[in-house]
Each structure stands twice: as C-alpha cells, then as structure tokens.
Length: 147
Image (cartoon, rainbow, N blue to C red; front, side, top):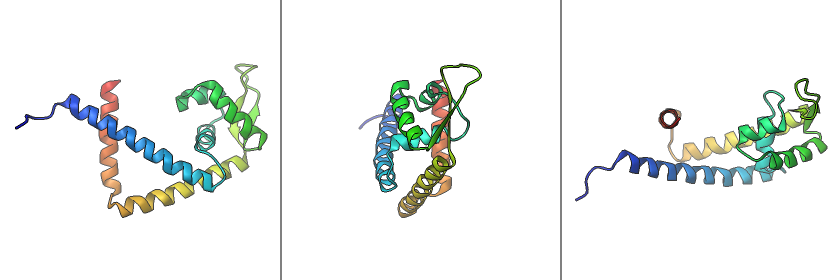
C-alpha cells in the first residue's frame, strides 16, 4: 500500500504530460502546415512578427530560439514577400520585421486550418472549453509559482 503522492512527483508527471502534449501538437501542426505548403517554423515566425514589427533578436526571444535560426526563416519569408523589413529608428543594423498582407493571409489560413482541426479533435475527445480553461488556469498557477 503506497502513501499519498507528493506534489513534487505530481509536478514531474505533469511536466511529462506537457512535453508529450507539446510534441503531439507539434506533429499535428507540421501536418497542417505541410498541407498549406508551409512548415511550423515558418508558421511560428509569421505569427511572432504579426502583431507588432520587431527585430529578429526580439522575435527569437519570444520564440525561445537562437537568433540565427530565426534569421534563416525570416530571410526566406522576406524573399517570398510574406514578411517586410523596415528601418529601426532605435538600431540602424537591426531592422524591424513585420508581416505583409500576403503573409497575414497565409497566417490566417494556417490558424483557420488549425482551429478547425483542433475543434474536431477536442469535440471527438469530449473536451469542453471550460475543462481546457481550468487546465490552463492550473498551468498558469504552476508557472506563477515557479517564477
């Protein structure tokens, strides 16, 4: 007969589940992106630069990636006309990167495909918005505690 499970053990199990969820989500997102002629790296890059123009270094920080890897994707998206580069008044060698109208349309298509896929999968699994919100609030509380 075992005793109660410790908070530390439950935390380790939660993190393992979060990693598995992230991996599964990444794999399904790769398939959705491929159907739209994109990759998840391109999707994430379009997304991070879609709100407000920022430098590649700022975008890399937001994505939690190395600047060089984001720079490669940005270069490709600039060449395809999905991102735009404009002078940065605060730093002459680090331009501000933003999405073009075409880039915003590609991102909107990816989000639409993803939302439809997720809605179908969540409905098939019987998960409700309220359940997902409760899970998210719990994860946010764990994040706040660890900070």
